[in-house]
Amino acid sequence: MSAIELDPGVVGPVPATRKWRGVPGLRGTGVAGHLSALVLAIAGFVAVFGNMLAPHDPDLTNLSYAFVGPQPGHPLGFDSQGRDLFSRILAGARSSLLGPTAVVVLAMLVGTFLAVATAWKGGRFDRWVSAGLDVLFAFPAIVLAIIVSVIVQPSLLSATIALSIAYTPYIARVLRSAALRERARDYIAALEVQGLRAWIICVRHLGRNLVPLIVAQGAVLFGYAMVDLAAISFLGLGVRPPQADWGVMVSTGQSGVLQGYPLESLSAGVCIIAVVIAVNILGERLTERANSVSR
Amino acid sequence: MLKFVVRRLMMLVVTLFVASFAIYSAMYLAPGNPIAALLGGRTPTPEAIAVLEERYHLNDPFIVRYLRWVGGALHGDFGVSIQLRQEVSTLISQRIGTTVQLVLYASLIIIVVGVALGILGGLRKGLVDNVVIVATTFSAAVPSFVASIILLSVFAVNLGWFPALGTGDGFVDQVKHLTLPAVALAFSSIALVARITRSAVREELSREHVQTAVSRGIPYRTVVRRHVMRNAAIPITTVVGITVASLFAASAVVERAFSLNGIGAYLIQAALSKDIAVVQGISLVIVAIFVVVNAIVDFLYAVLDPRVSLGQAAA
Image (cartoon, rainbow over all chains, first blue to last red; front, side, top):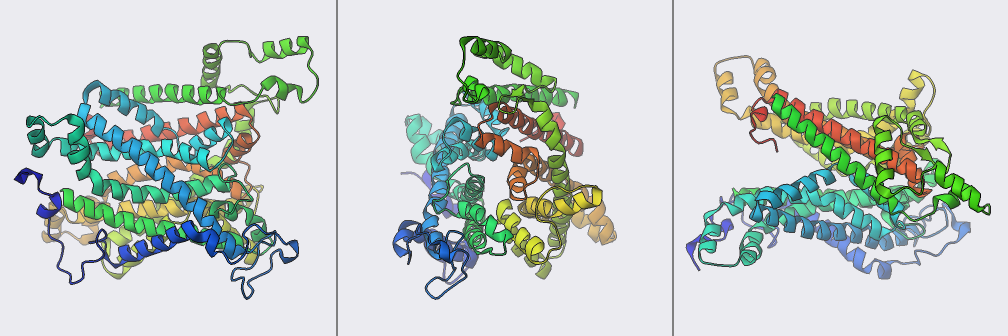
């Protein structure tokens, strides 16, 4: 349409010259960013197809194999119930990754909506919503999850909803200040003068320019959500045993740890750490990129 | 400055009231019949029910019960645990010491190790800085309960250097018992504090007044102490404060992993056994600590950076 609508990426600082600029969508995140994305792609693949990939039935107990170490065909050995650990790790990827994904989607949707709405409307609406979010800030995510677990039967769903509520104020606060910055720009004023409806400007223009920051924040949030959800399942207030889930496995493996068979807890813990490192690195790189573009 | 303090204190009181209302009304929605819990399976006579309803004020309207609860809470009275028939305040005060010790110990580790790593990485570019970055990237991703399990496995079970579970008696024994839990609780927060410290030091180093001081021939150590660290102290204080405030909730996980008898582990136990009054009481205590520590951080921020109290950008 007009020069005002130039993609900010075009006018931003030109990145240092590199021959290979990377996978589209990951440009500027470096080798570490690409490796992280690879780890996440593998984790995502296992989350979708883990049940099919599992060489054995993850729920089949056989007490005569309890705490038997790695064997041919059973690379991680067996847990306290004689279930194949490797199969349980693969099967557990689904709930361990599905929960944080749902938290990110929910918190991002509500948080972005509140951020754009408060930044756009301003005034009394902004003050009330911000005050409400400030109160929510006072509730640590774990405490909120504990309170929810008393009201409803604890499950992955209840923990997911509790965490989404707990994280929404963080997202809303970060994005609100970015939305305010965009709101003050000339192109928004130009669009308003052209008579475009507010929600169209918000969704198609302002919202779209927030996308890099939303993606970056989403990655950072995913790491926190994964840790907190696993912690909640560890406490027995989220996913419940005997379902295979990494957080649950760290917890059920604890009796083995004290008896000198730490493989169940350790392997599940290592999976959590690997995914969280990957999203943290990716989130950090994407945030750097988003900031360097918007300034 | 006074205006800032008053406004912040008012915000604090309002937040606490709304939060207490949210906690109380959420628990009000919880399923379960307190009468049935009190009778414990015995067949109730109408008179017995009436007596119990009278004693525990079960027939009063919601708002009256809330006001009685919050009024009591202001005096340190959180009601009675219907399951244990004990004062919630007693149950809390028996356990809060362990949690406070654990949080203080963890805070000490976070401040000493986190700030030291951050300063090291900030001042020494190159190899040292890269080591700090890799180490913090790793430790940031280790959840406290995974850290607990790893520490238990390595230092308690295999090496036998530390006791695995429980709180211990006497100062030395207590410190020994709390060392692994405190490290587990501190582990991922060390990374956060180190990262913020590092970037704060970097940013101050590149400031013009620091460059000027260096070029005037002032000894490097003096420049770092007087110009870099003093300004970097502002973001460092903020992140340390927020981290310490969040430890009270986070310690629940570690207390549970190490079977420590603190309020966090007790909160979870109460949630699992649906002991409503205890969940309400401990939730309110943790939220109150969180909000108050955050307010203290804001005051410190204003002391360290006088511009804040003039009304510029507190966010």
